[in-house]
Each structure stands twice: as structure tokens, then as C-alpha cells.
Amino acid sequence: MPGPNKPSPPPEPQVAFAAQLRELRRRTLKEPTEEALARRMGCGRSTVSAILNGRRFPSWEHTASFVEACGGKAEEWKGHWLHARRQIDQLRQGSSVSTLVPVVHPPIAGDAMLAARWYRNNREFYEAASERVRQARSEIRVTYTRRYPPTQYTTRASAEYFEAILEWAAQDSDDERCVRRIIGVPEHDGVADRDMLAWARQHHEASKHILSYEANVLRWTAAADGLNMALIDDSAVFLAFSGGPRQKLNGFSVEDPTFMSYFAAYFEQLWAALQPLGTYLGTLDPGHEADGMPA
Image (cartoon, rainbow, N blue to C red; front, side):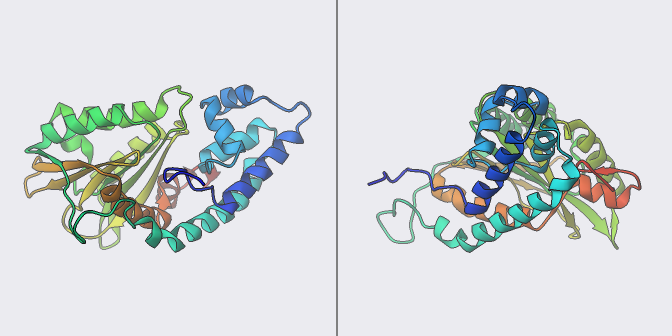
């Protein structure tokens, strides 16, 4: 009998898409090794292995790079990739309720004892979050929904936090790692905030070459900051709360898989409904390349 911590099998559409990629690889004149594919794709060999074995569904950037590394045309695969991703998202949404059931029930129904670390200010929060990011094993999910771009905050700790995430994603590692970020772009009467949009463009240019990093855009119409979070691996949750002054921020962190599962389900619900950053910018900037596809 499998143990309680045995990972669930990958969804069928993910396995089927992996089979299509393996077939493309087999059809090349000289079947490239995983090492050769990794060099051409700019990622680790274990990432290629996980994609080909169906353990990991590749981002569009990884898919396009793989197809081109095998001598194919990326644009011919966009429809296949989108179809598989929609099927996987539908399966995840259908099973989201079961993922929220705690593995170990607390002694008293409805009660749980959680140990939280409290951060009194911007510096304390971002220093702790940066340190935890550097310890991440495989996955980081973050949101940034504020009225001002990160470049308008004065603490060195906040700048180092954003750098730490990109550096972690870009590391040449055999780990199967990925970063997904939801960026809230404030809008007023349908017009995007100029400062946030300028930062979003800069951020896309700085990150679009990192195959383990993806960003989606949430069009934000509320005249207030959102609740921001960083979900690291399968248990670490950082929640940030900002105040009226631009530099005001505090928050807390919790290391608990059940606590994490609730926020992870919410993140996945948001992620599935949003546009990739490159696609969003392509709708605003004529001639902009949207995630490897012409706008």
C-alpha cells in the first residue's frame, strides 16, 4: 500500500503532452540527448527529464525552446500547449476541494495551533522572505498587487527580495524549479498606471530569458493595495499587509502544509484566469513579442 506522502500521479493531459514531445524528439534526424536539449533550452537536465517523463508540465517558453531545439516550429505547437494547459487547469479546479482537506486533523475540530513569525516593518519582512527564497527547493508562487511599483520603495531589503527571486529562478541547477508571479497592474477608467506599466515592461525584459520564471497580469481596479503573498515550496506562507504611506508594510509567515493549501488553491484559481505578462504587454505595445509569439 502506498504511503501517505506518496505524490499523486500527474494528470493525463500532462502525460499525453509529454508523449507528443517525446515523439517530436524521436523524429529528429539525430535524437538529441537530454544534456544537449538542456544546453539549447538554457535549463537543467533534470528539467528536460521531468518534462519528457510527464512529471512537469512545461511553460510555453520551455515548450517553444524544446520544439526549436528539435528542429520544429514553435508557432505550430502553441495550440497544442494551450489545449493541454486548459485541460490540466480544469482537472485541478475540479479537484481543488479535496486538496484542502488536512492530512492530519487537529485534536479539536475546527482548531489548529499555528506558529507565526511577525514582521514589524518593510525591512524585517523582506529580509526574512529573501532568506526563505534562497532556501527554496522547487517552487515559488508570489503576488504583487500594490499601487506603486517596486522601484518606488526605499529599503534595500525590498530590492534584494525581488533580485533574490530572479536569481533563484535563473540558477543553473539540476533541481526542477519554477517561479510564478502574479502582477497586479492598477487601472483607472481602463488605463493602466503609467509607473507600474513602465516597471512591468522593464521586468519583462529582465526576466523573459529565464525559462523557469513566468508572470501573469491581474488588471487591478481597486484604489488600494491587495493582500500580497509568497508561497514557497509546499509549506511556507508569507503574507504582507501595506498601509496608507507608500513605505508602510508589515506581515507574518507560517510554515504549515495545510495552511499553505488554502492559499495555494486561491493562487491557482487566479493564475488560470490571467494573461501572461508578455501577452498583456503585446495588447498595449504594437510590435511587442508576446511570450515568443508576434503580437
